[in-house]
Amino acid sequence: MKIGLIGLGIMGKPMAKNILKGGFTDLLVSDLNQAAVDDVVSCGAKQATNKEIGETCDVVLTMLPNSPHVKTVMLGANGVSNYMKEGQVFIDMSSINPVASKEIAAELAKKGVEMLDAPVSGGEPKAIDGTLSFMVGGKQEIFDKFKPLLETMRASIVRCGEVGAGNTTKLANQIVVACNIQAVAEAFTMAQKAGVDPSLSLRRSEAAWQAPQLWTQRAR
Image (cartoon, rainbow, N blue to C red; front, top):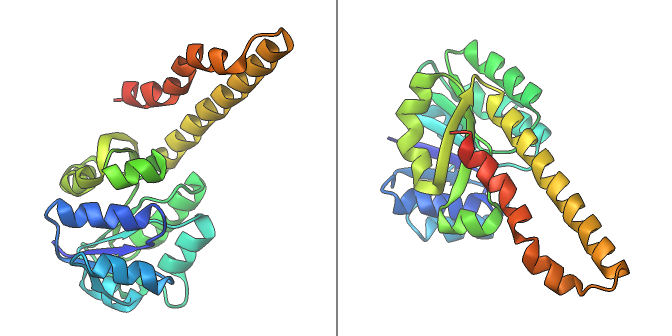
């Protein structure tokens, strides 16, 4: 399987290295940061252009900052999709607007290209460790086919529904995270004003930080 990965930032670079460690060594990579590209190439990947990735890869992965970046890379004037053909697959691991995921999938479908939206949770440390949580939207058969590839980067991987469901689930996960952060902040403020050492309160509040991960695991 030939794989293309576009986006080698703080998440994408270690994810690329874990793909290589997982035995998927035919990996083409691209990023605006040449130093990041050189780092991954030194681990066994090959540098390529959008055109080369679109024309030759069985599956194209992106790990980019937001919806406009994914749309430009895939659908822009020099977008990868211009060079893709029926039977290829696009997996977007970025955290973007689920509406944008559906729009991109609709455009790719005109060319016979399938898509999974597969945002991750865990941040840079878990990207390095290969213990990310994947929330995936797309057809079951496409999910099943490319699950072994995603497994090189993850601790858990859950198909949540059709295209867009992955990023919808990620949004729900972020709401849980935000609520926990706010609750902990309020608890610390209350404790401090009542004369209790906040550092001691922190130890008693550790369970609150586990809630988002537990919620994701239960989504299985």
